[in-house]
Length: 469
Image 1 (cartoon, rainbow, N blue to C red):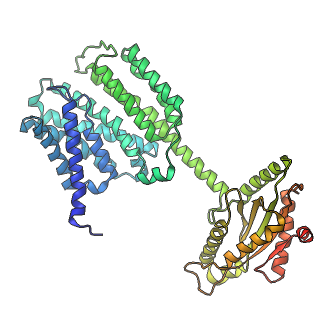
Image 2 (cartoon, rainbow, N blue to C red):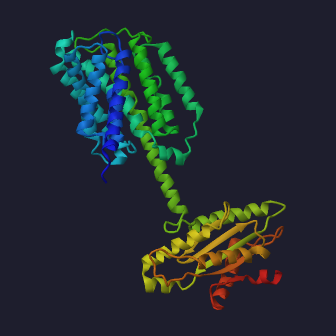
């Protein structure tokens, strides 16, 4: 598909404006004549480019760099450091994008533990590239040794990327939010995390940065990976600021290797969030697997109707619940069998047969309401239980289902193909004790056999119900 020129240019202009705003905010927030304490620009832009691959073009990367340089110049920076420093920043973005854009979408969106480890590795690689470029190109503007410069760039870029990038990659799409309706939040893990952060800052000392780990692990078990990523970002950035402002009373001097207290804390905090994020990914993946397994065990894969075993459990529970109430409600059970289904398979093929089954199931389900059970017993045989429907009125409902099936038109099938259904029904009147599920099925099956014997495409009631009516 060819897009108009303005449609291709607008996203690039939006990316340019986002970069400009982020860079200006980062510059204004950093200490005077010092590297930024927390520079989110690179991680945010890498996440945006991974979420919106159409922006990751040579023009897009060039626009990002020019926006960064323009923001630096607008804030009074000299043109040479503005060019070189932002080339280092661009190195982080390009490296992370190159390493993660080739991954499968599930890994890139951190839906698997492997994907999370890849994201951490990409953040480390991007930080290595930026730190190495800074030592080579930006050394004239640093007062520290090359080793200290490398460690400062690496620790800041790595910790910031690890804290920000997971939140961007796991963020749900707008469509997912509309379909899902949001996530129920359990307050207890969140409150414990806030308390542990408060205690960590109040207690102080190097070991205090590990205090929130237990609360983060609880959050990882209770919340989605996206919410855990946001909480890890909040906790990590809070601890980094607390260390930088000496609120946690760190007294470790800079080592001979050039590792300062802030560098060590940044790297420790970045590694601290790895565990909770990994637990969140594993928990989310396991829950998704259990949901799929439960769906496969409950719903027929072809028609979406209940499986025989799931129907048996729910129908038995429904009958038991009915018996437990003094004022028992009426109930109707219908057996439905598609007429001449074997000849449909033989004449038109199993593909058309599958289409017939799906169309039939949709037609029946459209006429059922919540709480009414619909199941596939096997082959072309289905069953419906309608609580609250009196047996004396069941034939009218069954006739409505029969007509709905007769009016079906199966897509891509032979236009001469017409589907009909035979229905046998049984039930229990109000306040009458219900027989077992097996007895109801047997009676309805006999009525179904009679409907088949009398010409098909008809509804027959069980003998007991015929006598009552």
